[in-house]
Image 1: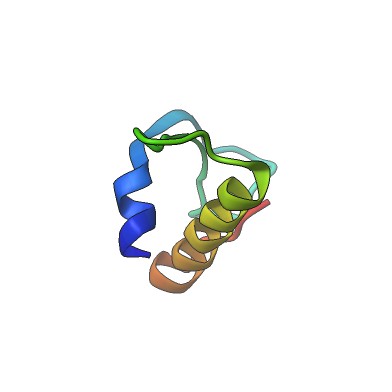
Image 2 (image 1 turned 60 degrees about the horizontal axis):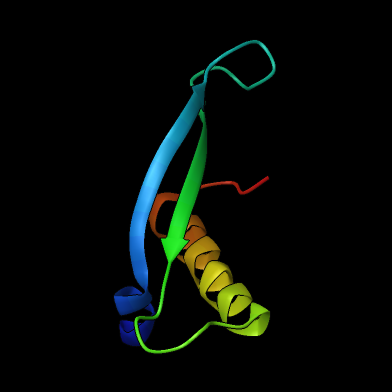
Length: 67
């Protein structure tokens, strides 16, 4: 994941939802990521792998539920 961290340039929260469609005490965050390799173009497989690792870490570290 160390190489992946070099490629993850930016993480932004662009929406936060709290409301009746979520269980009490829960929030929904919408995130965007900027993933960039300065030396070459990333392909879909590489990007999908990085995103999958991010999802696993969010679920494991902060008990996020990815929808």
